[in-house]
Length: 450
Image (cartoon, rainbow, N blue to C red; front, side):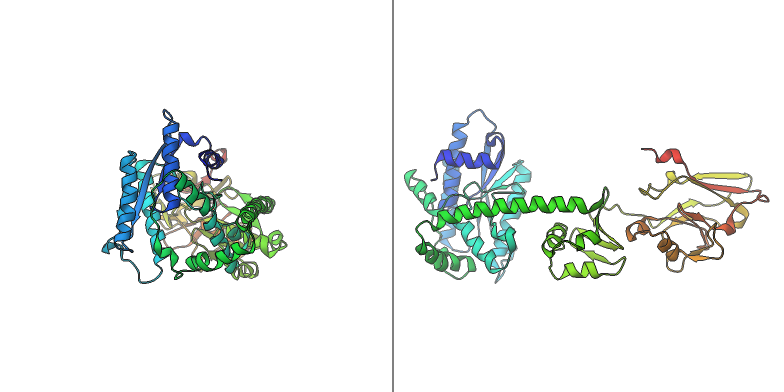
């Protein structure tokens, strides 16, 4: 039953010491949101002297004429009477209301509005008045979409700083609380129309289900709890599996492709879904893809590298320069110039190492540059006979596509490759016993110590 004590218990389950946090309440003027606002008002009165603070936000969509204005007035009057800061957004022509997808448009509009208020007023949590009946409707909608356990678990009670403390209480309990406490609210008569899927489920399907069992909603409440507990257990197991399959997890996540491929389709999907690869038909393509193939989600890039899946957060990747001028010219009044590359480029974990290359300045064409690989690049690596394509050199070194993007080449003004850092220099330009003017390019070991 919905009472002040049971509501406080629910709120405490969602956030530690709720009296010491700040909230923005989304209030439409309906019974559920007006009960929510009244409960928060009473909480504020009962916790005088604490940091408990909340404000109210309302959107007038102008969809129901005078009824929309009366909804606004009900919420506004409540806030004025109880000295609660009130935020209003009135939809106008600039909002470009679509002819269809009204619900999606309205949802996006209100959450943008709420976010702006939270940032401006420094309010931690957004609180909505979703209740148990909403949860049941969402369950049925997701059941029709084959949404899996996450969808069937329904609306989360605490998700990304959005709290839903009424989620375990039924619409009937909310109406009863409103009546017992003389809480004024407005009925949205448009909810009686079955023109949207949710309204059709609410008006035509849910009543039939309720008739099948006097305790249907209570049993659903318990089932929803079990589903959420199951979901939490499954997610914990999925995380443990992912941890076992993780080869490297510093700058980027690297998973064992071979071991992940041995898991069930469900496990593959749940792990890769976290990185935005949530299309079922895409998962088999990843495991059948050729080496160095890339897949992209909104925030991540996935690179197939032999027996590994490299997952890169695109937002974390620093912009990499394509070329760095190392030395413009050689002052032939000097016999030697020393260049330490740690002053120019960042260390590549597990790749860069101490080395020292000596070049005959008379054999070089200036300026000297650091640049990334281009098609057709080749060199005559020390320790080998003949020449080798840089692309083949990378393959022979078994470098991943991710590492190859970070490797620098040392080249001259004619685009001849002088060395692949830090592996090999080109033997044609090496200094020897006859060299009189020398350039030393190095990476000192001491700079690698962290």
